[in-house]
Length: 143
Ligand code: DQA
Image (tube, rainbow, N blue to C red; front, side, top):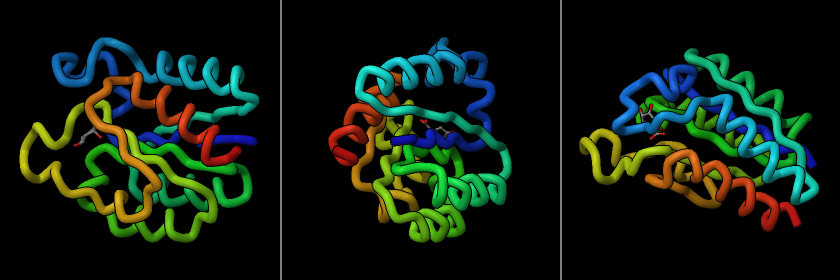
C-alpha cells in the first residue's frame, strides 16, 4: 500500500525556518525517514508539499485514487482551512495529523485544528520523529 505524506505552507523551509521551534532537519530528511520506515513495514510513501491551499486540496483528491492512507501536516492551514477538512472527508482511508512542534504549548490560535475532526490520530511536539511514528501507526491501521 501507498501512503501520501502531505505538507502545507512554509514546510519547504524546514531546517531553515525557526530552527529553535522546528529543528535543523529538512523535508528531504523527513522524506528519507518515512521511506525507510515504510519499506521495513511493506509500505511505500510519497511526500508532497505546497504553499497553496487549493493545491493541497488537489493533492488530497489525487490521494483518493493513489493512496491507502494520508499523513498530513497542514501547517498554518490546520487552524483555518475548512476546504482541507472537506477534502479529507471525501477520502476513504485513514488520516493521521502530524505537527512537528507542540501546538498546545504555543499561541492559542494554534490550539484548534479543523483537520483533527477527521484524523484517526494526532501527533504534536515529537519533532520530525512524529512522521516516523505516524508511518508506524498507519501500518497498523492499514493492516
Ligand atoms: C506546524 C504548526 C502550525 O501551527 C504552524 O503554522 C506550522 C507548522 C507544526 O508542524 O508544528 O507551520 O504544523
